[in-house]
Image (cartoon, rainbow, N blue to C red):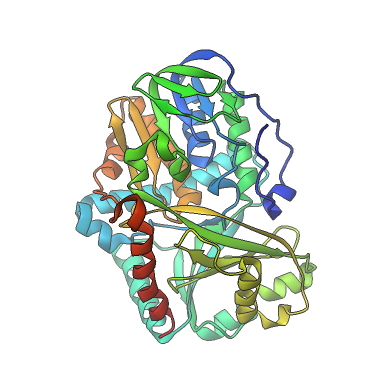
Length: 422
């Protein structure tokens, strides 16, 4: 039986999509894509449009993982930041990665328009300062973006403007990026899958990849024989690709959706309808939905355990930002996993000459996953320059092995949580 999507606001408001059958035979194709999130669906549609025969395997439903349940904020850059990237691969290569991230935002808008994907896209993203240290960092970031990277869609918002835009006194200032935005992530992913099928991609749901060689993917009911493989399962690949699993860790995060607030009350909370996140390490992020709810997320878990009452804790964080919502009920509450790398840079590469992988988006996946799928399609077609820039980024295994890696990370994160309080 095909696993249902998480009981989220996104699943409740998703466009109709067919249930695809599980693979129950042996099939042949040029390229097998494993993973039916944004990266996998984007890779599939871009490959099919180049004339390749493509099979896509998804263990559950299309968009079942992070792609269909995330905070859905489309953000410039990568999570590691440009400074760390430059130390890892040099200024020229780091600039090429930056350029791809900006092209990813443009590609998202292009795909939505080209395939007529109804996914509630809205322009605008705000990064907010909670304390004076954050404000100094924002001003430094603005200079970096505008002067060195020539990124002109971002501007500084002083406290008075932020207070006039967001119905809270929590924030000291913000950067506003008109090139960022937000959308309904499950409907976007389902729209990409539908476009892929129209281009000839064969999609099988309820089909886990148990293992692979350079030319075959084994599944419970059959196998796929292919010239190339593209692995886009992130943390859900697990034992099927242990070399990749060692480079990423699943970090839990949680989102709540309020009951409908009505158009006027929702507009009062976020007047410009931007996606908003703060600068704390354990950050809050929120936005309005198309039907006038507040979607609010945060309180990441590095332990892998639910040691607190998650919906209640997330609602308490929401009320620290918007205490005026104390009378508002929470209608949906859900969680999921973000895949992070040790250096927070994306992890793309090849396990074998014909086996490609995309993972490690570290919270910047909404826009970057889409263009990652395009890059892998380019690389398979013989134009690997942009893909290979990402493949040059060095990645180490998380320390401690399977038993100790998570406790070690939890200890490290305690430092950053304490820093948030200062």
